[in-house]
Image (cartoon, rainbow, N blue to C red; front, side, top):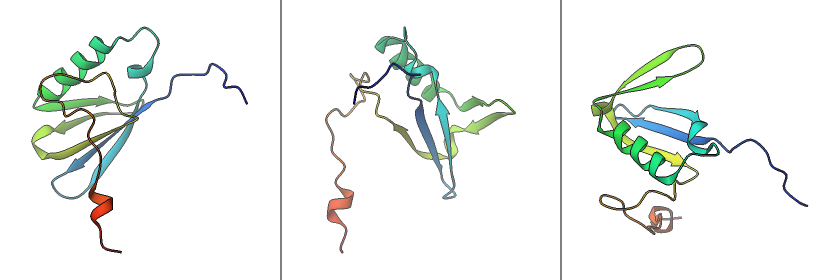
Length: 100
């Protein structure tokens, strides 16, 4: 089968909070045509440097206190992130160490 040109795949971001809860969102603009690696890198670093993160949804706007977030997951991975503060070519090994 041949793949057809379709809409860009959204990036999924999940915020994990200190209280054990989490929120997940789709971000479409990171994979739109014309967005460069430099654009993505700058936007993510700028976003993470803020004390409050603003997530604009179709029906509401969320303000997330960055100090309450312990982990952020993004899928698919953003391969264009590189440089200082980025661990490249890492492999997840937690699952390999779990007792069965």
